[in-house]
Amino acid sequence: MTAAEASHNTVPVGSFTDDEYTSTNAAGANALVADNLPAYLVTFSGLSVSSLGRGGGVHTQESVVVNASNGDVVEVYSIQ
Image (cartoon, rainbow, N blue to C red):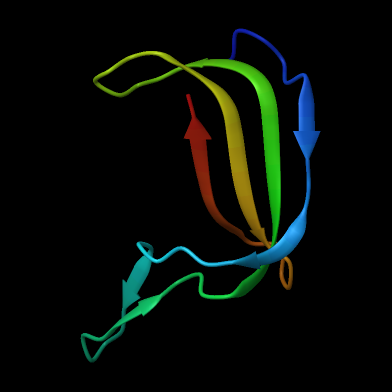
């Protein structure tokens, strides 16, 4: 899926909150999945990945949020 290998990556650790990523419990209440979560943010730069969205384009950066407590991947996102 990539046309080029990453030329740079970074791995800072900090607190991560995504105010749009929620889950719903059995009672129907919504709660944030990642709210002040200790996390690593692994970012790969210098990529060339074709976008699958309507606008096309190429993503040059991919970030992976990893829970610092248990190693679970919380979310992945790309930037054009």
